[in-house]
Image (cartoon, rainbow, N blue to C red; front, side, top):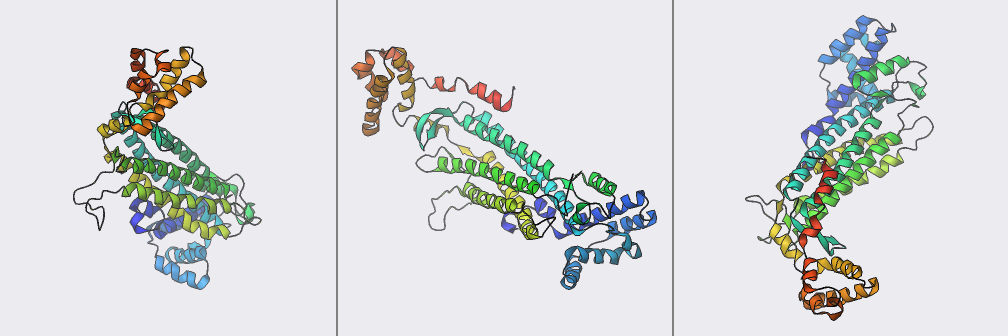
Length: 435
């Protein structure tokens, strides 16, 4: 985790203190369940809970023990015994290390997902507010980076809202899928631990029992989780690139908020750069990069190996921390985005009305002109506008082939901008529901 891109709430999910506290809760819940079914003394389970709950687990001490025993879970259990005393002999009975590690990882990934879902909710709120603010703000739609036809800035933001609404739904599904508990012992047969223990621990931790584990929880669940984070990151990059393009000097239809005292360049005092959206683009690349090793973790040897372990120790914190930061940055960017409707209108009119070419084409065909001829009549006038920067409507009025089919008033009516916003309400209702 890079401190520059880490928020405290998400960092806390992955701290050693949090990890050891979750390990304790798994062991203590298991002991309580064993006591309930008569496998260990109830007094022992109570002591484990009481002393372990009050314990402050010493990360340095656990690391010291691990340097000797070369096993992280054994190091923790040894340290726990230092707090609990003789009753610690009843801890971890029938469990294997993966029961603790995998169940803990599930808890952490679920907690991380909850933070990310809240982040998406903030971004969705920002996108919705700005979409309604600019619902009918006309702007040019572009395909291949070239002027296409008019749209509205509100529709651009509504598209992003719909995309992140899907992202939220996917993350909720990924959260549910990864939230499973395995307390099934070596190779997952429950030979030395009653299945009721797993069900008890799962319920206490808000997880579901893994239907069939080996010695580990199947990693297809984790692969889907990290793949979902990668897709969300890609959506963030799409939004960020739109802002970056709109902020270009030659476009300047919107730009990131530039605060008092902010500096854009060490050399050029005039610069106002889209640094936030560029940062989001870079962070998105990193999050996507974590999806592939997660998918490679699916293929483990037989009932388990530990090739997945080092990967998850890195990508678990890094992917969730990075996406958390990027989502919050994106929400702030949209909340404070500076929009220039007058520049949007200026760019819209920049090509002398060429953006209405399809309407003229359709109108000519409706008057009986063949599509091939209609396209040729419209295109030859459009190409003159590209070359000479003249007025498209005036050229069409002066074209004998066009004026033979359409009167001057009919042509002028085809240049009505409102035609392109007639169905904005319909789209908004589809995206946001009825007001």
